[in-house]
Length: 590
Image 1: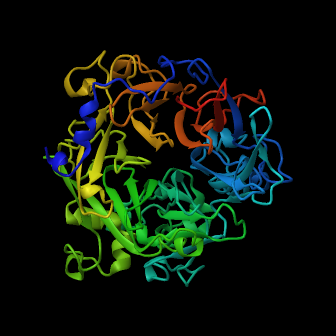
Image 2: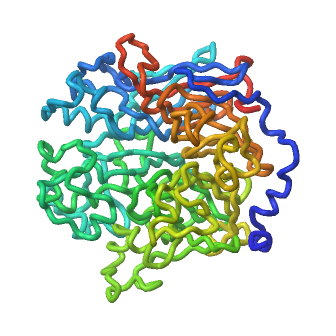
């Protein structure tokens, strides 16, 4: 009822018993095969895989490649991605030429080095750093409809973990919390790390999101850590990369502020290889999963974001200035200034956005919040202080292309109900939630700048074969389409909601029958869900982008556990981006 008076999701969901007309493909069954499974009438080709050359002069993949080779090659563990079509001679979009921006989130030591990470050198560390970041490269479609990487394009570049092509913008720029011995200005940043999900702006730029940056930092045993560092998961060992032993800036004992320069939303202009990438401090620092960007009725740019950790929060940013059609220079400044909010989900189906501005809602020096920069650098502390709702790992957010509906995946939470700071609530109703769920909300009066919203539960993943009650899943989850740990989330132009998973693929116990990770398609109004794709063994299916004509969908296959795709018959598994098309050249999903 609370969502109804807000014009919210409950009214839209009333058609849940109607047949769906959005999805015309035959559902595929769950699978444990070491291959990509698609519906009849669909095919796929590998566009690019880790180690493939994407810049002129790059070497072919070999596990023996060194750091300098990696600089010219596609990075490891592909994740979020976007496609930007180039203009043709008539000024319209060229359907056969585009630039792709693709994240490379992290690396696997056991596959990256011939010694499997057991005898690291300084060059090995550099190779790992270079394998992170963002890959920008042109792709071309031939007459057969096949997309290929154009490694000779002048638009191609690698924005990696050691690149000096980043600047800080917004309220935190130059603040003492960002100043280091190497950069006393606190404005010129080296590198981007753990680039997870993504976003695409209406003005044609790419958003990459820095997630688990904490894992790259370390310190000698016994180094004291502040409450702020602990709140962001920083530790002496990190992810055991041990970069700090040869790359001094990752040593927290010597450079405690270096970590504050990561965990941001980063905006990249894919059409200008000479441009600096901008870390947008006004959007707050946390473990960003992705960024869903939409324009409010008054032209304000609104960015929805999730902080991917158990017991963290969903955020919203509203720009200070408004979008101006055709004025790209103006629009590229929209993320410099604005207001950050954290979401509170009430049990009655209503919700509110709590402002995270210095001096408001108790964010004052008396309560430990020293200034606006402190609030943004430690946005987690601010969101927790004002009473935002702790969520079950907020991951990707997606905005419907023609409706005010917004969706967010909550992947899982083994601590829900066990920790005092993570009590059960209507938006996170399952204790030790192993399956995850998807929430949906609509802003009051259909206005994305409103401070109120109505919400409901779009889907609760589960296993009706092995579980009962809440653990079996919601009514739109059944034995044929069940899944766990929804993660990636995106809409296509026709309003189909695509759901990607990063969950338990053991296919046993409570997960029996769910098979490998997968990609599903949903009707956002009726709630119908169908499985579209199953990935190879042990992989995560993550990252999705559609060509302008909707006849190709690019999907990421991350950390496959065997030798898929085995292109070089060397037994080394490589993450890859695949291009999926219909045999008849039709619209994907139709």
